[in-house]
Image (tube, rainbow, N blue to C red; front, side):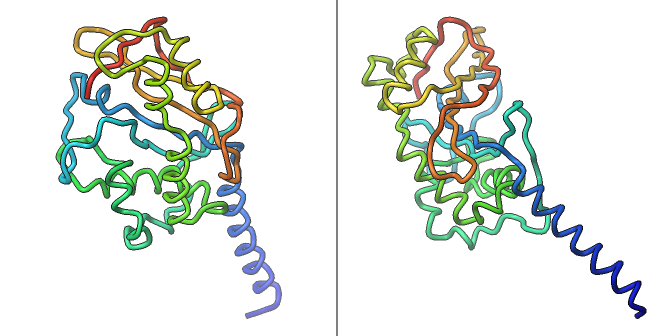
Length: 227
């Protein structure tokens, strides 16, 4: 192989590696998202409990998502590093409790976890490997007890209606940071408390004030359905 060809190939490899590295590192913060299962199930779409049985009545992890300050986000950053359940075998029991899938058909949630890693986790692999991605998410949930914060403020999942401002204030009081709130709509057209967004710094070391909040599509008053 001539020296010029070798030079070109080396530079091509370097460029490809740097491109992947930049892609993996190129985000500003994480959204840590928790969902209320009662709202997921109380809609027109199907809801199936996981094979392990009905989850507890608590907020569940949806994901840990790298994001940009302008509200956009990277996705599916590294197809060469797909989800591997064997890498998180010590976390599976906790994940089944805290990160279950309610999608149909009933499952062991592996497909859900794979989707979250492949779409979002691969875009932060310069910071968190697969085990670290899921372990960090579980730790963040233990630090942000959304249901406890709401119940302490008298906001209970009993089908009652509460003001959006009161919900936000209760979570901020309990967690220490202002949340983003998103809603869905039940079969009767009622807006429901669905997901809570908190922001995490780009090193995944702790919560921060959110640079931007998602569009919540919430009214001024929300239902907090039973589960």
